[in-house]
Image (cartoon, rainbow, N blue to C red):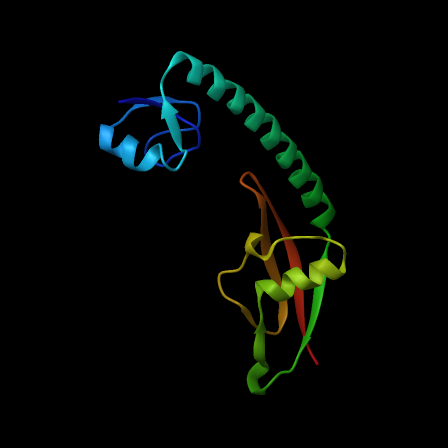
Length: 147
């Protein structure tokens, strides 16, 4: 069955691409989830219009993310935490704490965009990566000090 993808689908292709898939895969998965439509001439025109609108929206989001990244380049967040022996923190600094600190500085960043492998559990200066867009990342500094 030939279909037109309405969204990017792993192992099939990007949005707007015409692909041939098994009938059952199309009927039972792709079509009910609105990930694809049947490949007719009228659907091809509609999907092409949707693709152009999506590209315009995506370009706007990317420009906004690049501007925000420039503003965040020199941001340093300071955290005061209780410390035990050997400089070990009671608790930790998490992505939620970083998002709250950014909120206080009038930067509205979703905590899921903050890339922390593990929570910060030691004193000192730490570099935190923010993924603002698929193609735009920036870093900020988080300084953890003793309370």
